[in-house]
Image 1 (cartoon, rainbow, N blue to C red):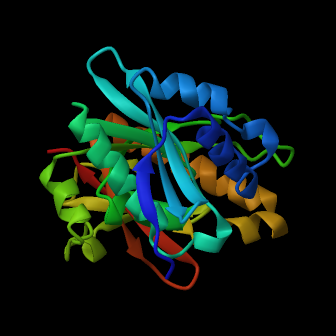
Image 2 (image 1 turned 180 degrees about the vertical axis):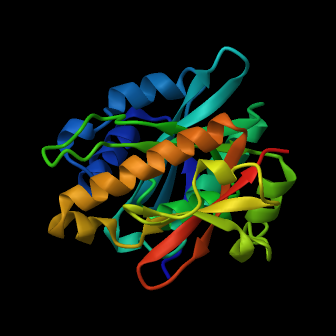
Length: 263
């Protein structure tokens, strides 16, 4: 495992170097410019970067946000160079971002991710202790295969007991989760539906395929069907006061998101 140093970055030339890392993760039309990042860090935003010596290994970028009730930090992107992935750099970048935000008076950080990127889901929900109560349909439109770019909005309550436990190395989990009722088992073959919402104790499980990218290659319409079901059930659940609090391993093909009522 490579030894990395983490620090806040405000210098424009360093921000320009970091912005080039985006090319390892997504196409150029999705890039955020160094000019935009510089403006953000001058006005309540943050860029936290990881370095091996002088080499940039990754960064996370967030800007100051306001929802009409309170200010918070919205973490717009995180990039880790392929040479440094699967070594804990992403987790550490988020932890450093959290400390930076707390020191400046923020109580929460938000960010979005694709619900079918399950490794990101485990990081966001279990290892970091975030929760989801907002489903955002087609944030970046619909691709040529008819697949909408739906996103979950993570909310990270920075000093909550749940988050503090997670950053201490105690991932979110509960022995009751495997017994929760399943709202989706397979696309097109749902489990318990809306009539079951108020009839069980604890919570519910929402199935998602483990390898959505591979399924999309073989059968784009199957992924669209999965997303349609997940969208409908999440919007219904969130409207009823439920939120996603974790992930649970399933079988060889699926894992589960865990829904519980907000307390």
